[in-house]
Length: 609
Image (cartoon, rainbow, N blue to C red; front, side):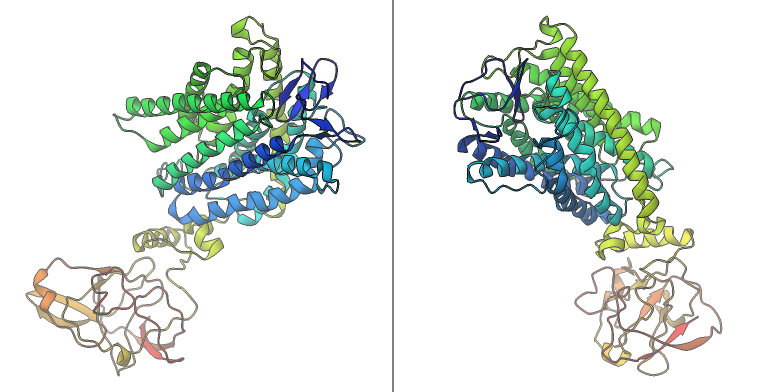
């Protein structure tokens, strides 16, 4: 095949001043329809890079789950899976076609063809499938960026719908910059690995989403920034994203044949030096502003902001330029959260600075640092710092502003429709409880956290599931609880809406008066307050009571004032009380403790009302 010496090849797209060409080496060829069919080694490189990029989903999931509160860890991981499941579906149905279709009707705005992507031609099948998998990994990344901005207050049903339709926001900008007929590709804009279509579009969508959702409850009303649930997971997520970015940037050379392997090594070098620069900025900024403390979020944002900064120019930049670009990107990402704090914009994991603003910088950096490529003729343009004038910088900024405006309008339109139909924000009770409990039935909260949540719900006049684990509660019968205890009694604390409870006094031991709720009126009846109570096992400080024997029935004490002549009535109790734990001789040291359910279906239990 005759090669073109003035071509630009970015993310698989090549062009020159007069015509668009695909493939810039003698191993590339075209089929009968004129579509590009590359060599197997290029396709293998692309497919392998796609596998590496796909691990970024795990990185995003770990990072976000580590930075949100513990009651939303599982939910944010599920949303990252949803990005691939539903976002991948619509990208296969129409996203790839609108981005890279080459059929009749293809124009500067969108492609046409390859809907429900498939190929039966053995000559082109490998290349089509490899390119689809690679570009699908980009598309799902653009969506998963948004999950961080919507964290801790978005209904999962709404997010599933969003993942389906967000492909419409992404696929057209991808065509503009990476398709041979795209408007910005024809203007000579350069974006090697997705600063525009992936990070700028994803960051802008996240900004729109967080503005529509409004801040998390109490975020700017005294509670402040929630503490990281798992900083280790957040750091592990950063490392996985770092690893994935190497596939992201190096894979965007779209092959290793000819001189493209050299561009891949340059991309790797730029990726590393830029992340080093951003990491240094993050740690230094934290050390200088936080009384010599090294804040984890500053480190993470510094590194990731630098990686975004390197994305547009990775195959064109020299190592020292990558370091400078990364340092500036890291500075942008680290300083943005403080600005958002003042504006009262709630960005849970920092996507506005890391993705949106750092992407603007990445695209502008091309207009400043670009130089003609002598290896594969990626571009003949020269940036402002090397005497090229403002042309390249101008078209880069025009592309950035255009994609920002497009995303602002389309994302707002789609999110408004979702909000009006499915409902975007979860209920107040769901937000307080956490999505893990309310949407997945998974409770990883400690008893202390359950008590705090219960108090908050009660202050708003809402029931807590920790009060009423079911409409029916069963206690184990007294006769089945006979054990030999020689440890001190536990203190059961009633919280929330607990009513005052009658207590029987067992007398003084070691000079201390203790009041108890004990099995009364027969072996199968227990005097307890059930409605609105959480029983929490607390150890007393009096070590001398360790040898004080208890009766061989269950005995609890309660921190409430004695009431005279309280009415006792029988209530029918059910079979699934998870608010109480078993008091056994093996678990006396554990806190909290519960009473396990009975085997009998209809125990009659006395309850204070």
